[in-house]
Image (cartoon, rainbow, N blue to C red; front, side, top):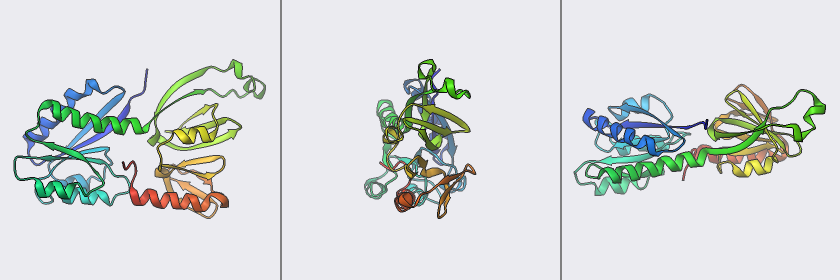
Length: 263
């Protein structure tokens, strides 16, 4: 059974009828999204949404909401380390100025109008969801490591298994020997016969970096950086060599500045 990637969506609108309508449209969209599982939550205003401090992949955000309008909410999202894509939802009022402001925000992925047809809504939303899921899907073959060194050397005896994984769940990847890497994700380990460079080249650009010639780290898992080690949010300590230190710090600073998954 193929593991589905979860795409977390927030719907922010002060009207219950609008939140319900958008949620129903997303439910209709589910069957057409191969290998994607939608997790949807609704909020009645931007203040409650921002206060939740939850990370979402996509926010369907009404422009006209009380206390903070959609542009103000999206501007706050720009300041976060992990930024979602934002689809603005506009009603029938004049939208020229709001559109101009929205297009200047990096989080903006597009616009939905209340007057849009069902087909137009599905097209807009599905394109964003597919972009999100495609960026973070990674497929590889792994094998179970045998504790007996003699058997471990006999590669022809290995049974390989196919795996699809959300790269946002990978904390780091380590090269254990030539053309063998171990992927650490969600308290699991997967060993595959690829070089670290081959594996690194498949990962989303700007989200991973070498800390050591044998180690690649997901920048989203970095808790702090020491002189000779990177401390991860998983309570693990990973080697940081002098030759990779400067590049790693620059990549991490850029990651914080630009936010995860910008496009």
